Structure formats: structure tokens, C-alpha cells
Amino acid sequence: MKVLLINGSPRKQGNTFRALSEIADQLHKLDIDSEIIQLGTKPVRGCIACCKCAENGNGRCVFDDDLCNRVTETMRSCDALIVGTPVYYGQPNGSVLALMQRMFYSAGEAFKGKPAAGVAVCRRGGATAALQTLNMPFQILHMPIVTSQYWNIVYGRAEGEAALDAEGMQTMRSLALNMARILRATANQPVPTYEPRQPMHFIR
Image 1 (cartoon, one colour):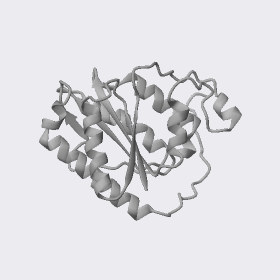
Image 2 (cartoon, rainbow, N blue to C red):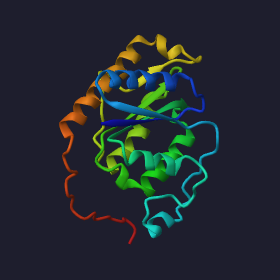
Image 3 (cartoon, helix red, strand yellow):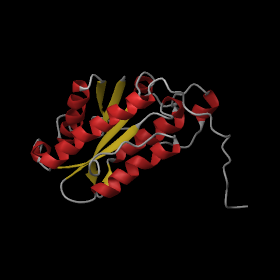
Image 4 (spheres, rainbow, N blue to C red):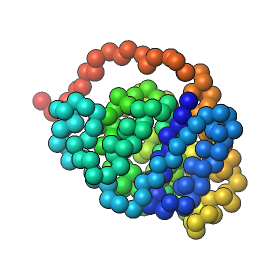
């Protein structure tokens, strides 16, 4: 089993990476592989609603000049997803939101039914709002949301300060324990066959 972790921070070794590393270390102790993909500082396109991915039917975004298609291809061989982000103005990093929206829309089948969790890292406030935003797309794709002993939040401002948040680090380790439990309980279990979607538009 393998968990893909997305570091939605432009800082490679910042507090979001520290939080995700705590999860990865705990998963390793539980004999579960993991991989952290760094968002980095290069631009990430937002979705332009061109629907070319649906027309092509190949599970790839038509724009191939950023991380989107690389992440989705990696996800095809992974069993779960964790997305971590710093909190900017009470919201996730805009680049990680752009990435999530495009990869879920263009390649939802690579994610559907797999356990997922969001992790928010902040200086002081806004983490719960950012965490809720991260979790919302998971629900559309039938992805069980993995919780912990508290909301999946870590506090820290300067690089490395997250390691001093003892409760936050414990929360990350508990998240890893719960992720492992859910993965083992659902291993080799097929995703249920759902009814055909019945979209309802409120404007007639």
C-alpha cells in the first residue's frame, strides 16, 4: 500500500513539509509506503472549463505544462491521498486549489473511493476554514475522509516551528495510524457500484 502526499507549499522544507514528513515517518513504521510531491514555486494553471479532458477521455488535463498530469499518473498507483497546505488569508494556497480542481475533474477515476485527508498549517487562524475547503472535493469523489484526534492542523510560522507544536505533531501521527487502519480494512475491496448520477439544475 502507498499514500501520496502533496506538499502544497512553495517552500520545500517549510512547516507543511514538516507536518507531512511526520505522517510519512509514521506510515513507514506501519509498513506503508509514501511519496511526497512538492508543489514548488512554478505557476499552476487554474481550470478554464474547456472540458477537453472529458472530450479526450484519457484522464489527462489538456494543459501539460505543470504538475497536474504528473500527480494524477502517480495517484493511479497509490491507494490514498493526503493534501497539505499553508493557510493564506484563511484559505489554502491558490496553487494547490488550482491543482486539485483540475486533477479531480480531468482524472477523477484515479482518486475515486480512495481514502483522503487534508492538512492545514497556519501561524494563528483560518486553519479550520482552509481544512474544510480541502476536504470538500473528496466528498464528491466518494473518498473516505481520514480524521485524527483533532482537526488535521499544525501551527508554526518560521521554517521548522511546526516541529515545536507537540499536539500538532501528535495529530499527524494519529492521522497516519487512522489512515493505515482504513487502508488495511479496505484493501482489495472494490469501490461500490453507484447509481448513475442524477444532476439537478435549479434554473429552468
